[in-house]
Length: 180
Image (cartoon, rainbow, N blue to C red; front, side, top):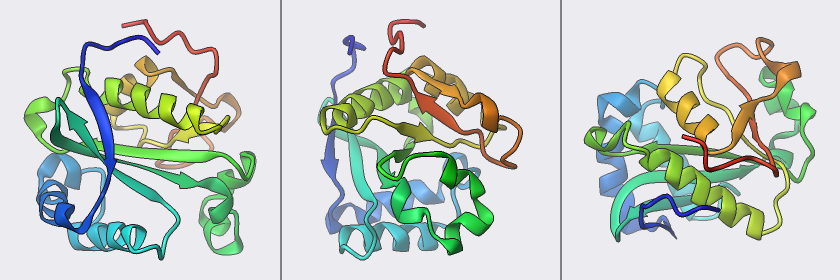
């Protein structure tokens, strides 16, 4: 993948990260798209402690923690409980993964960092052998949708408009990741 000009890296979340994650989750720009901060942090704790198969990471920019990113396994959610409210889960292969991310500091939004982080993370997932990678922003989150498009994700045509509150986007293996 092309060099974005950003020194982006990832490291797994550890318990030492919980205070900064709690702080980020309480910020208005994250509260708009994420749930209750304590509940969301509880989900991340479950991931770190192995009770959830989702893999959480801290986004590093030049070595500084600036955001959160995770990937989750579609197949682990293709069950009656999840599919009842999210029937679109059955539209993807069980070995697909979904990605979620947020930049923690609002002063770093709209600077290309999220796009660069998603490109790098997608590259890492491709290197691990994942072929189907999706992301599911709220369609009203225009900043996120634009960033994801720049990272090579596009709406899944046959699902567009069929999933209330979710715009399902899939990364293309042939994505031109040098477009602005």
